[in-house]
Image (cartoon, one colour):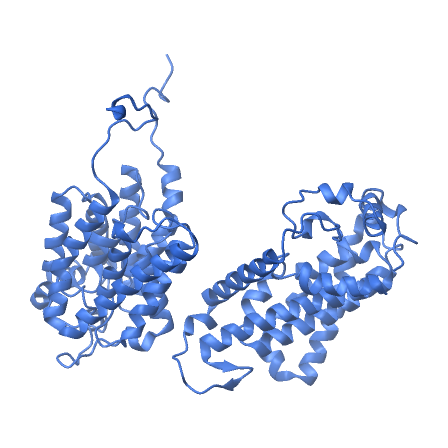
Length: 253
Length: 314
């Protein structure tokens, strides 16, 4: 169970998909014109992410390695279609404002990335929590970006107009504003994380080096540190090369 | 004495010209146009210009102070940015708009990319575009107590006739520093005589623009070759200010001769496209910042060959 909590923390803070991994930029930049749009997009993605991670983790020993990407896409696309119809049926206003970006969740690289780098080589429960953590991290980031853009760009918070104490800066709800806010918030979270001190000696918790926020490591900790956490990780890395060899009993909380 | 023995890499031909010196000359060159704007629009224009300059300098100082960088406010580059931005504002705009634009120009466009010499587009123009997009209502409202008509360019676009002579002297509505073509040309002539800018970029820019307007500016192809029409377009809007003072910005224009010509042609075509086919009457600022972004590519294709390289081998 400890493993699951760690996955949540990892997804929301340590490897936040938007601010640290910088994945899924298309929806991040396009739909965050308001906090509610960001939240809706984030939660829709979370649902797809949790479900696809679960199913792909269940099927991880069945899916042949050579066709794994098409297989993942089929799984993801099925869940996206379900979410698409559910939103259209029950929250039509959100569906209208998100528009094309709901079907585009299929090609969101966070989902495929988690399937490829985590769910395909880990047991079901941690995979679900990995999806949940990543999804919540994504939702949090999109909501915060949307909140800032909505506040500065149209003087509202979650759609409620504030008293007019300043003139809204319209550019913030347009495309350039998305880049400004994303850059500023990424810089801010880097600053906060840097304040916590140099973490170059903290144990390596990442599933692989591609998503690690620790720039001082350069792959050293990944291969050198010993311990129960990284032992599993190492086996993952080995398993990636040996195709179907790994799985069972690597990490069981 | 020790300087005589100083060993260094090329260039060995050194001039005493410093950034501060050049920036001061640009400020001097801008003064006629700014002074005419203040004379023309009243004390509020002076207030706008002072606020943008003050905001630019203070922003630069504070950023460099808190980031522990060398303080460069004395090199006048922030003053030039503030002055140019102030001259690009309509006089009726609220005063805080200039301050906001100056903070954006210095902080986001200039300092975050590394300060003077590293900015990827002209800070004053980027700030102007930022303001036009954000506050379209304020930034396109050129009516004052004396002028209630649209700008000459908007009238031209609507097919109405304009008074070309007042456009050249500057007795028209518009942004503070852009109305008088004569005042801008006096400043430009000063810069050229002092060797601060060359005429390569402005001339290719203006000539290309005129040919484009002649060909496509008015109804059918080639009907725009009409002295009144072309003169009005030449003197109207921010074209003069942009061509002589902003397109020639050292940092954001190509350094190779061929590159400068390509850059000027590109500017002329883009400005023409925006003015003729765009939704707004003016297009100089967008043309310049888009061309700024293409400068690295232009420089890449116009790298000069070193002496002795290339050619046929016998």
